[in-house]
Amino acid sequence: MNLESRLPHGIALPPGRMITSDEGDGRVQPLWLSDAPVAAELWARLRTGHATSGLWPLLLDAMDPQDADFRPWGCGELWPERMSSPADHTPEDLLARWWRDYTITDEDDDQLSADERLAVTAPFGQSWPGRAPAPASVPHADEIAEQYARAFLAANPHARLGLVEAPRGADALAAVGWMGPLNYDNDTATFAAVVRDWEERFGVRVVGIGFSTLHLSVAAPPTDIEDALAIAAEHFAFCPDNIWQGSRPDLASYAEELVDVNCWEFWWD
Image (cartoon, rainbow, N blue to C red; front, side, top):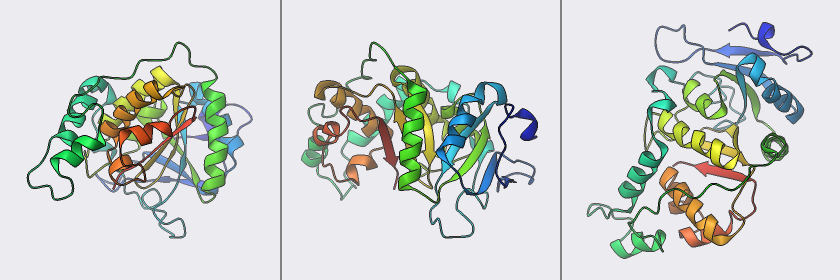
């Protein structure tokens, strides 16, 4: 990947290197990674120049930022050849299937009783409510993304810059071979398909990725609890650990924290 020739005029990259994936014959290089943290301004300029370069910028955090390997990015724990295409999947079908899988009581599951499992997803219970309605407008998505990039770097000062060849941020998740949600599905393209849908409905932008975390800016977050509850259902289907392993015990309390908040963050155990 000849990066410098593809960048818009006036943008220079800091020191960095191409990362070779662990899979295949050693010739797959899905990621360019900076050697050190970068400023949010560079991320924003690269994101604006994506239409010219075809390179999507990511702010990458590691399992242990102090580790020289900077896992999974620096040591190539990436498997792009295992991924299907996000375009091969229907977001509505994925969310409905995941919802069904996570709300059905498993007799061998010693974590939640049937009543406890239903309480988590009240008022919907086992009935998938469908996707949340799209807002009437999605303003200033790129400006919101830049603001969130600044906040992300302030909270994660060790994050480095990554560049991935992908037509959009959602597709970069699969193109780079990220395996963060591995315990739920080892084809990241399924998650990318849902993020694609959020890009179009809510002005989401993929800003940061960690070892098993995903950080999105949101230009059109829910503005009332009813809409937030519908989005919370999508989040539960997409990443149940946000509730199962989080500080919010059910959809209702989780939804309260989505109202007028311009970022969505996910963590898979």
